[in-house]
Amino acid sequence: MRLLIVGIVLTIILAIISLFIGVSDVSLATLLSSSPQDRPMQVLVMSRIPRTLAILLAGSSLAIAGLVMQIIVRNRFVEPSTAGTTESATLGFLVVTLLAPGWPLMAKMLVSAVFALGGTALFLRILRFVPLREVLLVPLVGIMLGGVIGAITSFFAYRFNLLPSLLAWNMGDFSSVLRGRYELLWFGLAGTIMAYIAADRFTVAGMGQDFTTNLGLNYKRVMTLGLIIVSIVSAVVLVSVGSIPFLGLIVPNVVSLMVGDNMRRTVPWVAVLGATFVLLCDIVGRLIRFPYEIPISVVVGVVGSALFLYLLLRKRHNA
Image 1 (cartoon, rainbow, N blue to C red):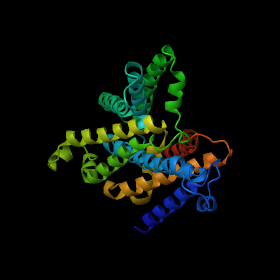
Image 2: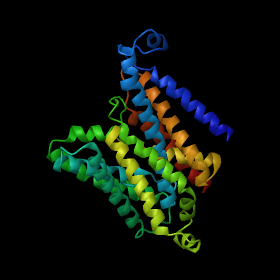
Image 3: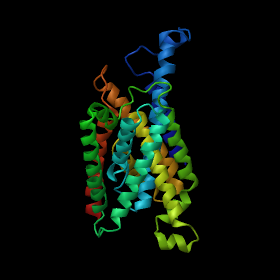
Image 4: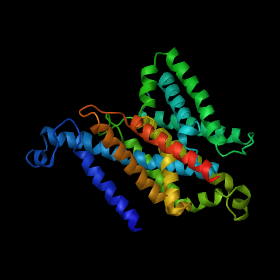
């Protein structure tokens, strides 16, 4: 518990630091010497605070989505970006952009979530017909499925001259976050709360269908709830800030090494560590080429891929 409190304090410190990093001169001195109508206060309220909140919400909710998916699939190397979920959400966003470009962002998010739900369900369906003797075969199946869906998405984006938009959706970036353009991410917080409430059910479901049924739980309902949480979180993050790879894979694995596999205990850790990790990567991306900015998906992708390789090699060594 003490370490969790330390993690929360560290997250708060990083969030405060994040508020004062950027091209515009926003510091404690300029804020105290300016009125609410002056530029420093406007930048803080309109840009810096929404951006920091978006980072916290996206980081924690995506990490929780990865944890829920790993429990459902019973594989530590699965998350939305290695199961075709993110690619399906992107396809749904492209379809609704083509067919109903005037729809509000909320409606587009719902369509994207439905496609993400369908893509994840298809992934689980395919796993039933694959002899999964090797643990690494599961994410490989997901990556192949995501590649097929991504190719279809790219074809239609090219056909209708939407490749720049597709690139923007696939490139996670918080630089365009402003007040009024990040509020959908609060649905991710709702998903995190739902995951915590149903943590014991997910833990039991991770033991298998027969074990879950013997304990009196409806296995299909628990699985459906998990798929809904993962789909909504993937959709809102994609629509709001773009895709962030490896986050839902790395954070739950690190937390599992630290505190074990009890989901009731790990959910707060995963949420805090996910938010802290994304905050730290965002600060690095803003400082490494200041005043220019490296997109968060690039920084998280580099760090996450290195950690992913470490986990793969570690699993093989332990096996």
